[in-house]
Image 1 (tube, rainbow, N blue to C red):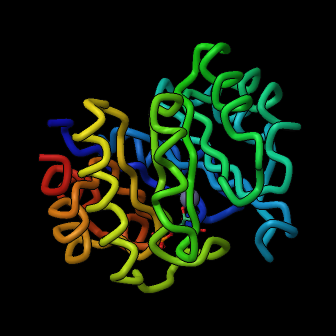
Image 2: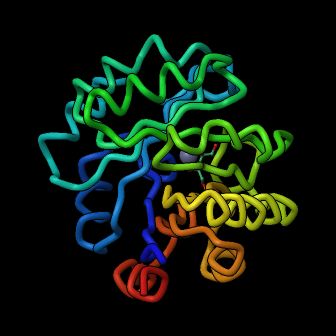
Length: 216
Ligand code: DX5
Ligand code: ZN
């Protein structure tokens, strides 16, 4: 059984102070730092690119969990790896040749992740499971922080946890969107072992306490 990790998402941070956000995450003891890359095309919103990842790399030894919400993500794997990413996750819906890019990420020595949006069934992951270190189940429609979790998406996490067990694999199941202390309980019960948390983390007045309770 994997220990639960919180991946704190800087999407909900003050964009004028990412360095400060990283310091807050480090001080909270959250296991991973989640970096949402959006291109205004795969999703309607825009965020940042590899330069930010590289600049933040000098500020922390924390684990960079990069979530690419971009079309043709294969174009950017090298740049995000060079910038100091530890894990790169891209969307199944954005890349028909997922195996090729998952292998590329692993060959660069990083953790490889695949993500599915709420409308995509987890059966599409069956063939990809041996190639992944992370399956990121979106629990909201990707693009914005602060949305409410779609409960049906947790059923996919549960199904995937069964598929993982049957296959004898140990990749992590991450859930992303609308995770707070309350929904985290159901997510953990469903089999999630990485909890991506943006707005609930940055709103919390006791971040270390929140992380202690969730990562226990
Ligand atoms: C949304 C992003 C999430 C976002 C989650 O498309 O992938 O990582 O930061 O934010 P919250 O936790 O506020 O739903
Ligand atoms: Zn994300």
